[in-house]
Image (cartoon, helix red, strand yellow):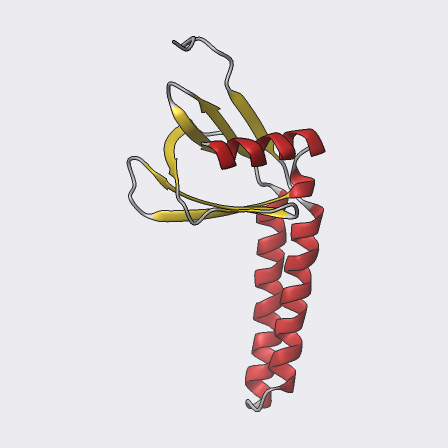
Length: 139
């Protein structure tokens, strides 16, 4: 019989420099693709303003990311986004766990919509990232 008061696993996920770099590179390539495409010049200028603005929003949101995950045997997986309450979640089988990033696919118990979060390996300490990988694989 297991101890129902056991200490669970807790993970505080911070912002990732790698995610920000990849996001900026992708937005830059999107602007380049607009200029190389065969669309009118007026649309090229508009897209050259819109895409960097969306890139800035992406960088701002990723820089402010405050995600917390916890797991216990009694409650299962729970997530907290931006300092709100913890919500019970179900981790989906489509979750991808690798050494570079974890693509966490989940559903909240109260909201059946599918959601996803990318957790880069530099958003946690090396030990916490390894623990999260193992915990996701065995649960």
